[in-house]
Image 1 (cartoon, one colour):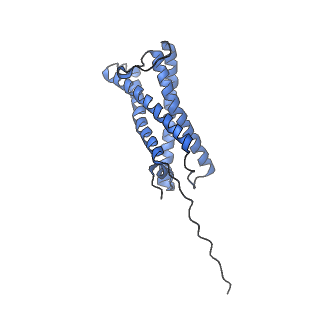
Image 2 (cartoon, one colour; image 1 turned 45 degrees about the vertical axis):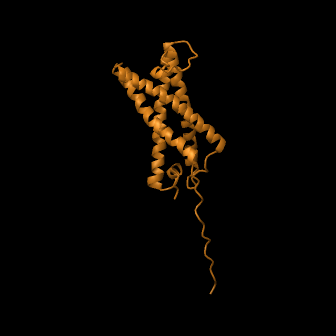
Image 3 (cartoon, helix red, strand yellow; image 1 turned 135 degrees about the horizontal axis):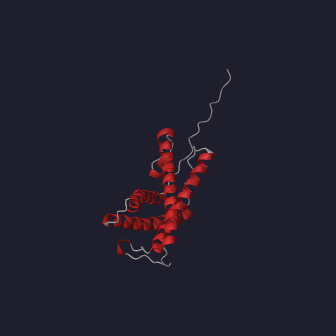
Length: 193
């Protein structure tokens, strides 16, 4: 009787997780964005739509400004860390198109997380309101309300775009975690299977 050889047993490809520092940067950014986006939309609705300019509206605007500054410096540190240390290899089970979309989404999020605070800062600088909670931010431009309003319009569009990208990012992470049951989300939690 001929002897058959069994197919070699192969183990699944190793899954790399993000470093503890990369995960820390990510989750602090998530927490700040979870504050920033709702505060941004609510303050504009209260101020511009309802025309309520009271202490609460001012506090919302000041909070949005300070959180924007924090996000800018946090994301800048995160980006420097990533450029120096790299990121783990892609989840091995991803299709090539998924890898491409993932990379594009991540780099667009990085860009918007830096550009939106810069735009917000320029808007408040041109508007003459760059002193959240009385803390004067450095201003290098002359007051110009028309320029400020144009910048705020672009800033609002950027806010809508980043909200859509974040929704797509979260939706994809949940799809991978709940439907595909792979390690995409677990790599950022730090617990691969």
